[in-house]
Length: 276
Image 1 (tube, rainbow, N blue to C red):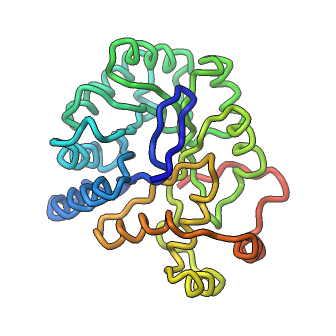
Image 2 (image 1 turned 180 degrees about the horizontal axis):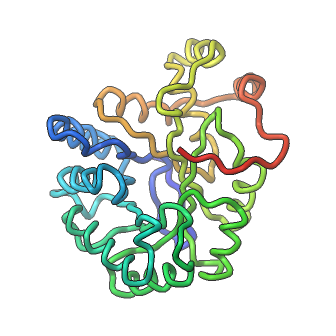
């Protein structure tokens, strides 16, 4: 499993496991836990979740999945912006820890910019880190201007990642955010790297036939080819998890990338940050 380093030196897999939409139905819980466990067995030992997902239900699913292997898993969770005051962040973290059944969250993110001053959130993150309740912190859905404001508040070393929407059809971050992060050796985390299964084009199918892969695997391989990006696709089906893992072994050559650029062109100007 290829690894990517955060600025603090911790290494994580380039391919992790997302949990958005997990925990919403009790009848699906066993299947969701099994899918996460299969992903962990295949080396995808980073799991991303959030207090927002199913009102904490996804964190409970993660807790079930890692109960007997917690020390082998890197857990990412997020605090909602309206909870991200100094005291509110601490309370939200405690609630997430209870649902996860653990004493620490490896990486804790502000889910998107919100109403509370960044200085309050950063102070709360620093206190949680000093107490050993989080291993590090970062943000999600921040564009360059917001990242610069965060950096002025937290310092150059005060952010381990920015988790953003990124896939073949959502390439706006390549104009400025991705280069900005690369300059700081800060990896971005790509959520919805498969556009929730909506990426469709005959070029993806053709490249897939040449590689013995599916169109979805080609699209995921395209995201994974970037050394500064961690992909966190969500999959509740074991076969989808295995297919995602196999995308790591697909090598796209210059011709493949050129074909994909024609169909899914890179940005030629600044675009507003896209979110889902």
